[in-house]
Structure formats: structure tokens, C-alpha cells
Image (tube, rainbow, N blue to C red; front, top):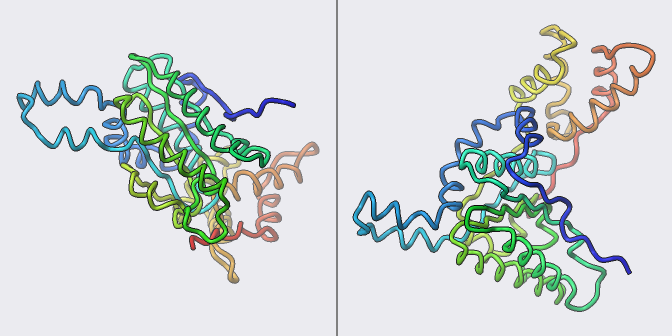
Length: 298
């Protein structure tokens, strides 16, 4: 039997590929500025005592309280709004700015749910936390991104929650609790489409909570300008793309993923290999394609 792969990826940070990727993420700088200070503090808990002694003679009592924070951030919002890509690029920028070499970004695989054997999921999660903490040395940091966390962190009180699911959530909570003793060398970013189904104990532990929404009309326009600059689209053509990807006939506005992973490839397929990509190709696809349905946060 093949061994279950716990991580989808293990990336040594800082990574030039992620640095390039952040340039393609609309609104990255603004969002990074919003969460940077809190996440930087989480990654520097072992330095808080030195800072307190230097600036306050060690008498600032709230430092002890802050040091008890759980190293957990929750990114939540509708599917296709860029939570995971943003988490990876934010982690990379933080490590780059901290001048911390050979840190590692782990992306947890949904395969940790296992094959259904009793106790397997909890065991795999515990192994994942063990490997992450092993990677965090005195001069290194480890950041664990948990994507589609709905499947691992669902509230234990739900009627349909299986015993194995409850064990997994308990293991996840225990793993995050144990990370506090690493003084900020390990941080978890949990990404979820439905924050309402996440176990309340995890929600309470989040030191940082960031919401992701579908792009507004202005944001979609910025995206088209950035991605389709080579086409030199006219203002009416840009307006058409913005309007056609907005809310219409009972359908929601499009997500970033709808535009980049569905609209663009379908339009390109109409052009390739016989001629250049034109606005007409984009218009044809946009007129017939619908946005991904909203994931209800119930």
C-alpha cells in the first residue's frame, strides 16, 4: 500500500516563484498591510520579552498576555476568492522581510482524511504537526497552510459529525495549542469557504481573522486591465467584460477563479491556434458562462 502523502507541497522560503506570484494577486499590498503587523507579531513571540525589557524595562504586563495568543490565522470567504494563494504569498513576504533563511511553507493535503480506517485521520494530522515543528529551528520559521479546512475543522457539535471527524478536530486543536511553546516559530493559516461550520474552539483561538469577498466591479476592471493589457481593449470593451461578469439574472458576480481559470482558458481555446486572442472571443464566452454558485455560510 502506498504511503499517504500528508502535504501537497513543502516550499523553502523565501521563494522567488511566490514573490512573482504576489504581483498577479489583485489587492495583495492592501491586504498584506492589513494583516502584516499581527502575523509578524505571531512569528516573533520569542522576541517579545527582549522588546519588553528594552523599551519598558520588562514591566509591560500585557506582553505576557499577548504571548499566550494561539499562532492561528483564519482566512474565510467564498470559493474562488484567492484565500490560499494570498496565504502562501503573505507567508513568503513575511519571511522575506524578516530575513529568515531556509524557512518552510507546508500546504496540508486533504489526503490526511485518510482511507476511512479507525484513527487514521487523527494519526495523519498528528504526524503533519510533528513534521512542521521539526522544520522550525532556532533561526527558521514554519508556516502551515490548511486549505479547504471545512473538511477537517467542522464543528464537533454537528449532528452528522462522525467520531473520526471529532477526533480529527480534537487533534487539530491540540496541535495548534502545542505550537505556542515554539515561541512564534510555527504559525497556521486555516483557509475555509464556510467559517460558520468551523469548530467554535478554533474560531476563538484565531489571533487573525481575514474575510475574502468576490471582486467588485472596480476590482474586476483592474483585473482585466492587468491580465489583458496586451489586447489594448477599449473602454466600452472593458465595460462589457465588467458588466457581463457582474451580478445578473439571479446569478452572483464572478470570482477571481471564474475569470482566470474558466473565462480566459475558454476564450483562448477559441483563438488558438489559428489567430490572436480578440475581445470577441472573450465576449462569446462571457455571454454564455455563469458564475460559480455562492457557497452558503450556514
